[in-house]
Length: 322
Image (cartoon, rainbow, N blue to C red):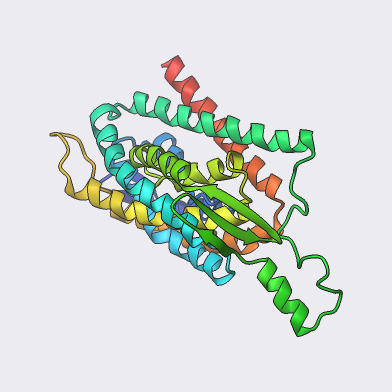
């Protein structure tokens, strides 16, 4: 064991001190563009590469979210691209779901083989749905144009004066138009988008259950759902999904740390490992959130779906061949 190799007693992992933050930076940089914290992809790394397979890996993922996400949320807030009502519904649904997900993880998914199959099925469903929605847009010619964050609305004028600058800034920010018990309406890029609250809350609750078992907070499943099913632009979903993931991750850490599991089953997080992942995630999420507006929406969706599909196939094949 060389001088840079560190032993993490909770997880039993031996790895280089610099590897967790480096991996987290790369993962978070790309995933944060789609509203995914990166925990979605860090868990397979911990399971397959670090051989960290106990339920503690789930709570360690939550620690990563708590440390890393605020930098990305701050960037979206600063640019006016955080849909607060959307984030509120996501949190209201996923918080109770995380509690149910905890019991699902410790009661029915402690076996690493079953957990790998569970991961694979979740990833496969989301990847197929997201790819189908993206290719359907291309086939029908419904891909939003322009592909990156739109400029000022028509008629803003070609000038570069202060009035034109203000119109351009307003066009690129999220503005709540209406908020009732039935739906949310918000404007972005010269268009208005509507979200049904009962449907979104129900989906958020189910996703919270899955997220509580998986260690992702739920937002990383809801973000592709909002884009693929609700047809919302990824530029308006990412900040809300990250904020929802951050708050539900706090609840997840509390549950896994304080609620006793059955004898012999470790659920408390590996704080040292989670914080190291989080340090890399802080910089990765900030950079990803800052550059997101320059990346085509279709490219972001396709990238997320492709990575999910590859991971899903790997875990399902590992289960079938075992």
